[in-house]
Image 1: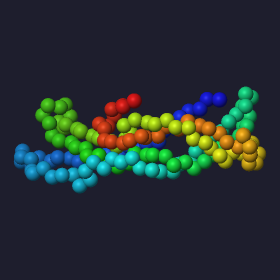
Image 2: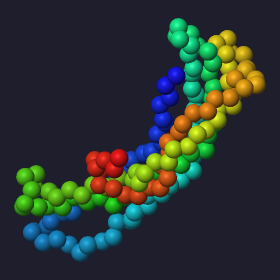
Image 3: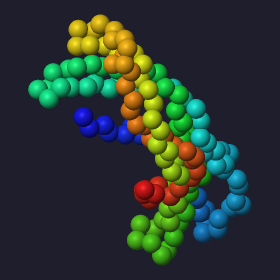
Image 4: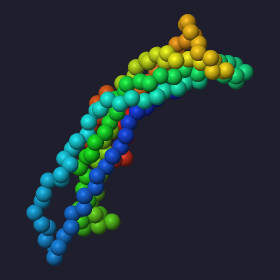
Length: 145
């Protein structure tokens, strides 16, 4: 049986545009959001199916699990530039994990192929889960793994 790790995370970017009027830029103002990228608790529903060698469903195990997620806004900007082909210098930032933490979780609600609850040792299934350990703003598109 092959188990694939689950990954929890999200990417949100807020873009601001700088505007030149008559060739002069106005005074700079702070972005109202600031950098609010946070590691927050959440709950997800995980279900894992297990099959025998002939492809028949042996059991399905599931559980609601508390996991971390990345959420928030990061300051991004676009400003005019004579040095770039597009005419704009873009600095886009996304809220995402600095690294992932692997952990084993136990799914305690297991059912056979007919939907009957399984008890005893077969009534539990341990799976690996990967979740954000910490979150911060990164340049969008840059892979950190």
